[in-house]
Image (cartoon, rainbow, N blue to C red; front, side, top):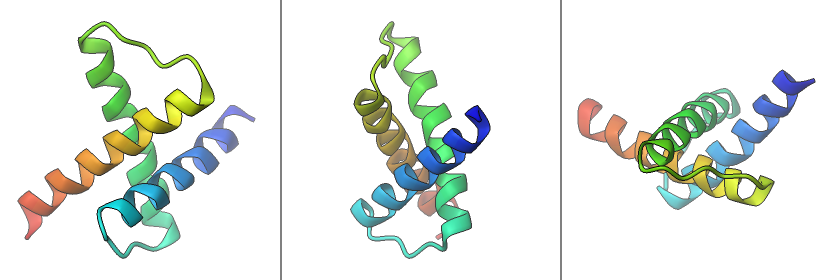
Length: 78
């Protein structure tokens, strides 16, 4: 059940990040970007000692991480 929730949550975070960053992605890429963004955002936040405890805070962290991931990917591949 947790895996399904992570995939749905990742898809939502990836979709929001793609709209913010004006990136045209398919739904599979949105899932990948959202899940990687969630890990990236959570990792960076834990480095400075913060943890997202609510669903809304996790969504903000995931979207922020996904936006950062899209930005880094654009710098490397464009």
